[in-house]
Each structure stands twice: as structure tokens, then as C-alpha cells.
Image 1 (spheres, one colour):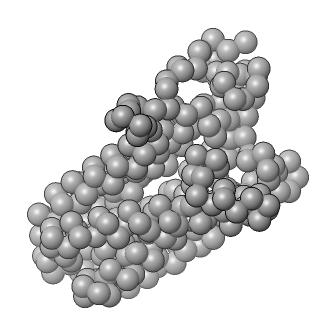
Image 2 (cartoon, rainbow, N blue to C red):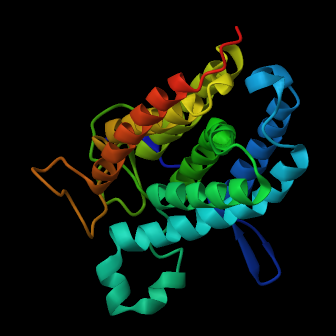
Amino acid sequence: MSILTFPAIDPVAFSLGPLAIHWYGLAYVAGILLGWLVARGMLRNPRLWPNDTPPCTASHLDDFLVWVALGIVLGGRIGYILFYDFAAILDDPIRVIEIWNGGMSFHGGFLGATLAMVFFARRHAIPLWSLFDIVASVAPLGIFFGRIANFINGELWGRPSDMPWAMVFPTGGPFPRHPSQLYEAMLEGLLTFLVLQVVGRLLGGFRSPGLVTGCFVILYALSRITVEFFREPDPQLGYLVGGWLTMGMLLSVPMLAAGAWALVRARRTADPRP
């Protein structure tokens, strides 16, 4: 039996008349705004960047908020539809706008944010890989808050477990389960953020455009693959192969290759200044 009780927190944080404000939406807002604040602080330190020159201004970063928010939300929803819920959408197309009935895909949000960065960098003549590095260094903050919101919603829980911190989720049946949302919050979110800040700020990673990005992509992929061994697969997909391979694992494998390529590329463009 579980010795922990799931904290039944209302998914609705508060209401403004007929408008219900959900923790999930607040998590997106918190992640984006906190990431924006941290990124602005990094731009104020010229020594972090190649040739002692920040790649963009604070005003650029302010304008970019709208672009990246749209990229994350649209990409995340489209990714979920294509990767996890395509058959159900064909049967009932109205589900496309029912974000509460299914949700978002990190891998789709990742692709959407990447496209937003490419278009924004070209429009404003900003070095693309340095913009990638800025966003990658703060993206784990959004992941952290998003996984905490998943926990509050009692969704995306883990596989049955007899560990002392396992808990019974309201929608997870009678069995104690891994709180895999918290594992992801710690690994994909907090730990990855701390590592990237050390790499970028203390080890000069921002002076090699693409290095912080490569580290982020690899760290996220490794963390996601690891946690997938404890997370219950999406019920409409189940295990893809052999009772262990999940869609989350499959989508993370190309990220490892992309991250490794980014690291190799970064070494060729490194700023030689110590």
C-alpha cells in the first residue's frame, strides 16, 4: 500500500467570473516569464558572449516572447495530435481545440519553438545559434513548471510501484504508482537548468554558439528516456515494442543525434578567447 496520499489540489487555480484559470496555463506563463527574466540577465553580461557582444538586445527578447509562446503552444498541440492522438482526431475533429482532452507534446512544442526562433532570427538579423543557446538555457524552467502542473492535474502518472513514495492517483486505478511527473520536473527541469547555467555562465559555453543547445537537447533526451521506464505510456498507444518502448523514447532518440551534431558544430565555431 502507498504510504503517501496524493494531494488533491484543484486543477483550477482561481476563477474570474465565468473564466477559470488553470494551474496548467499558469505553468506556461510562469515558465516563459521566468525564462525571459533569466535571459535578460544573461544579456547584461557581455563577457558571456562571442567577441564580448550579446547576440541581441533586451528589446529583441521582449518581442520574441510572443513568437516563442505561439511556437510552443501551436507546436505542442499539433505534435500531440500527430504523435499521440491522430486516430481520435480523425473520428472527432473538434478534439483539436480541446486541449484539456489530451494535452500537449513536448517534442511538438520543441519543434514549434525552433521554427519560431529561425523566423525571428532571420527577421532581426540575430545569430541563430546564439538565440538557440539563450532559449535552451532557460527552457528547463518551463519544463519544470509544466511537469508540476501535470502532477497537480493528476495526469501522466507512472507505472505501478511499491516504492515508499508511490501514491494512488485519482485517475490511475487502485494501485500506488511512481509520481513520474515529479521525476521529470527534477531531471528534465531543475537539474538540466542548473547544468546548463554552469556550462553557459561558468564554463564559457555561450562563447561557442550551439554548445549550450547541444547540451540541452542531449540532457533532455536522456532524462526523458530514463523517466519513460517509470512512466505509464499513453493508453491509446501503449508500448510500441516489447513491453518497454514508448513513443516518448522513440521521439527522444533523434534528439540525441541532433544534440551530438550541435556539440560537434559548436567546437568548430568556438570563440578562442579564454
